[in-house]
Image 1 (cartoon, rainbow, N blue to C red):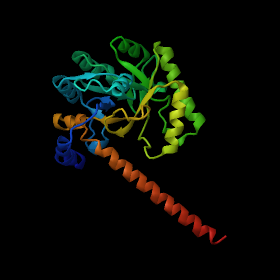
Image 2 (cartoon, one colour):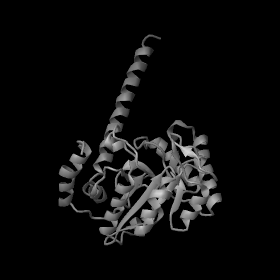
Image 3 (tube, one colour):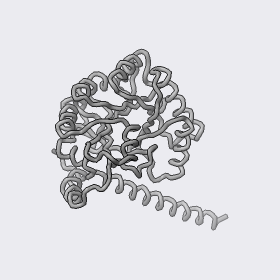
Image 4 (cartoon, one colour):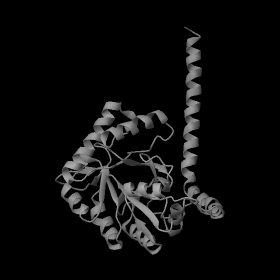
Length: 296
């Protein structure tokens, strides 16, 4: 296995420390998957890979089952966290972004075999009556979505066209999140409560987060997930629930460390780096402004 700093720090530094400080309150891991397929991602750093092979996915689901995990959806997870009364039952939320058709062909049969549920987030412009493609992969059709609903698979919005929302104005953002929710509800007959933020989440941009949260509330969403890395607890913002990225390289040891919360340090490190970059950028902007002002 290739050298990985995140794996090394998680297994040999954070995990031993966490065993000395057991959790005092209920927390729930939300796993983030994308495509379940045999795809060569060897040129990509391990952390950024988004494909999980069918064999690895089946092994991960079998591990969850053998270790007593029960699945729930994001809305149920929030209710459990607020009640904080079921610590004895190990819960996990399994999510899939982008609505790829390999969920139907590869992931769902495994989930169904183990009695697990999942939530799939759909970019609705790429979900059609016939098969469409997104990022070079085939996506689900609406008939497949409706079939999956019969087996307790839930669906949420992943916007309409999968843009980087931070680059849009407020009106454009509103259209993305309102239209996608409406389309899913019209096609399925089910209410859509959950939203998944596309691309890397700007966790240090508090103004943007406030604006988006209000937009999601107005649109009728009750919760959402993002790419911030962590387990979630009762203090988590229900519209920006963190998740744990999973791919083919997550063996049983690393997967368990993530489920235990030993991978949460990633989020804190990323936040510090983003805050530092933002502060440095603002300092240089002020210096350039002062420089040009002195010559006016």
